[in-house]
Amino acid sequence: GPDRLDGFVPWPAEFARRYRERGHWAGIGLYTRLAQLAAQHSGRTALVCGDRRWSYAEFDRRVRAFAAGLRRVGIAARDRVVLQLPNLAEHYVACYALFRVGALPVFALPAHRRAEIGYFVGHAQARAAIVADREAGFDYRAMLRELQAEHACLESAIVVGDAQEFHAFDALYDEPLPAGEPVDGPDAGEVAFLQLSGGSTGVPKLIPRTHDDYLYSVRASARICGLDPHCVYLCALPAAHNFPMSSPGALGVFDAGGCVVLARRPEADACFELIQRERVTLTAVVPALALAWLESAARRRYDLSSLRTIQIGGAHLAGEVARRVPEAFGCRLQQVFGMAEGLVNYTRDDDPAELVLGSQGRPISDDDEIRIVDDEDVEVAEGEVGHLLTRGPYTIRGYYKAEAHNARAFTVDGFYRTGDRVRRLPSGHLVVEGRAKDLVNRGGEKIAAEEVESHLLAHPAVFDAALVAMPDRWLGEKSCAFVVLREPAPAPRELQRFVRERGVAAYKVPDRIEVVAQLPRTAVGKIDKKALRARLAPGAPVSA
Ligand code: J2J
Image 1: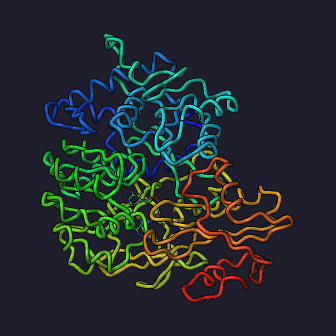
Image 2: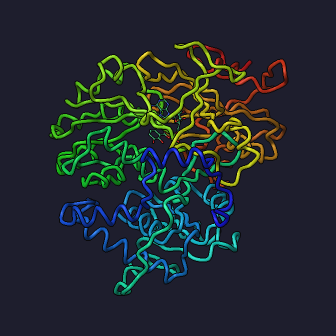
């Protein structure tokens, strides 16, 4: 309709009609779904966070009280609110309360700093932010003060813990629930939140997901994974990430009436302790974490026999690591190849072992359209490697407020260019062979090369810069920046400090910096990143 969120690219009417007719889009809002679940599973445990255990009824009561609190502090439908919390139950309360109000969480990761959060606030014109007081030695309140000085739109902030001059999270629960509160949530066709892209451009892209499309992907995922009220899910990855949120993640587990256990830290000892204590049946990890858990001596000290499935996704999984998982943890492996833009692929429980170990799964939906094409957008022969394009009932048609970029990131007929290079097996399973997009996938954390290069280029002594992936035994990839410097040339350490002090997440600071006289160029004058990556291959000389 004419009153739809600015900057959202809707599905064309004939697609929307089809997705509704097929029952994919059920017309139910994300909060409305929680209210149904609270009625159905009221006494069951929904969330475990530290020593706190909340039933579905308790969880829903808090969501309703917090939503009323949000309204009191002036948050209304369609307002954008940056949500940046560590793995705490408050994350889900804030999330569902915002859904109920019809306001849009903008999901940020705890690792994000002034540069990223400032960009989200400005681009989404966020009216508020919800943060923790401090975590891992960082004071989010100090960051908010700086951001409020720069962004007039950022009117208020809500802080879990010691709130200082901001609103205390717990104070928003305070008043009794107003009687006769509006029960109608937003229309399910509306944008529910803005998710982060692991994108490859200079500034991060925001992904508008609707209630309808997201709930479809969540419920279909829960079905594929066979979730039921007895499932106990350990959320070890950052809760705001799309994988532990929706594949099937916390939202899928809630949808099945199961229990979500939050791990404050992803390390093996902390997670194994929770798996043993809560009899966890399912968890999701990135390959780097799977490897760390495999190699941990703590594995033998805990009873992990409740685990039925470990999902692995987010980055390339080495065959060797895949093979060790079922044996070491006495459970199934499920590979997940997904993206916050939409498309998610899973290996299935009844897939033969070679597909579970050697493919990244097949799409959720029969209505997920897959095209594998060459550089000219022509479909490659069946079984050949090409660029993955996709369109479907839960894959976006455009990034939020990014018209120029959308023209490149989507085909004219609405297929999303994933930037991944894949081949398709006769069974329909996809194998990820590499990527064409310019990013470093550092243990599942995506780093857009251009974003880091622009931070490096802001240093007066940096004449040219190129960030590329280098192989790493633990993380799969780390980042290496090749730089051309002017005199007086700073030391590599000084450049790393410079990038960090610009207020970017620590994982984006180049792991290594190589000073070179010039950057290699391709025939058309672009920086030859392939040549740079080749220099980082084991045994290759670095400075050419
Ligand atoms: C290789 N590369 C993979 C895999 C993602 C479920 C699971 C993961 C994500 C995610 C997600 C991969 N093998 N198994 O949102 O719901 C790389 C691809 C992809 C990009 C998306 C979910 N699984 N990748 O990782 O938005 O390059 O989502 O395009 O963070 O991660 O990153 P992101």
